[in-house]
Length: 165
Image 1 (cartoon, one colour):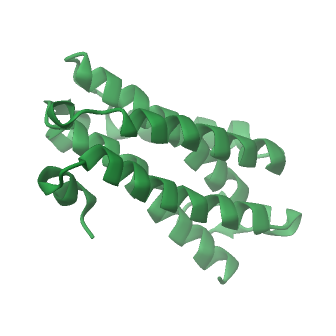
Image 2 (cartoon, rainbow, N blue to C red; image 1 turned 120 degrees about the vertical axis):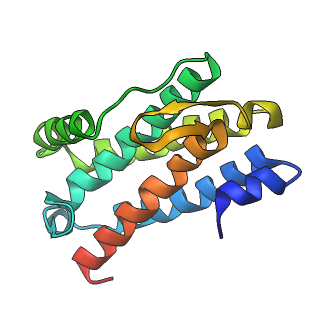
Image 3 (cartoon, rainbow, N blue to C red; image 1 turned 135 degrees about the vertical axis):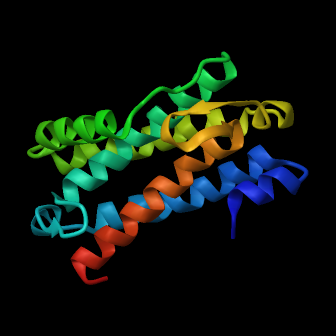
């Protein structure tokens, strides 16, 4: 299902997106909580990071989407380059390499609550506000907010493949 199209045609786009996001994050958290210490250290071949670092990356991505949405709503473009994003991700991977599983799971839970509330609070007119988003060109707030769903979905698939689940 294309969340962005549902938002653009639905009666309560923000609520629908937040509900889908909540469902995705419940899956992410369930898998994270089910991981053993050994699972946490398994490399994700498509990610060049361990399972634990990818979970922590998801946890860090939740609030970043809210920052980007707020930038759009304030009329500011997001000038991030692919190189900057890659550098941020590499720096994060280094910092999160030995982070405790409990801390990451806590951040997944708390960050997803705040992100869900932020998405749910968006109005229909806000969802349609547009601005430039880095390499993606002109996008609307609905597209930016739906990154909160797209981002963990792709990483969860990678984690599950790495763990053979």
